[in-house]
Image (cartoon, rainbow, N blue to C red; front, side, top):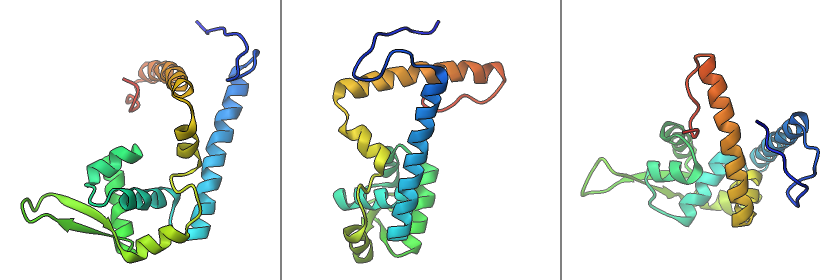
Length: 167
């Protein structure tokens, strides 16, 4: 059953499925446009620039730690790291104690690129989310969880694989 709510600073009364869908599309287009602009300005994707920033702020991260900080699957982060390493923007180091542990560090070239790259390095959507109040962020997450549960139920009805982050 759809929830009804009064007018609030978060949005007007009379929201419709179509008006909400239009706002999702604006969010997605804005994030894509910003990422494309970042790539034209810096030569790396928005996600790669974000990864470089995380490595600058936390030298010696492991792949899984970087993936968690960026809300990425570990294999996606690994592929991105391989591209950054091939471009000479970061390097991998294995610890002498345990050769299986790989630590990630910016190279001088990566630090230079990051220093001249446009902001926000994390991307416009992650930065906007970071700037929300705790209350607004909690409300947004709760509302998105409701939406994701609806989608999960529809996916299961079609016999599709469940989406991540919906359980």
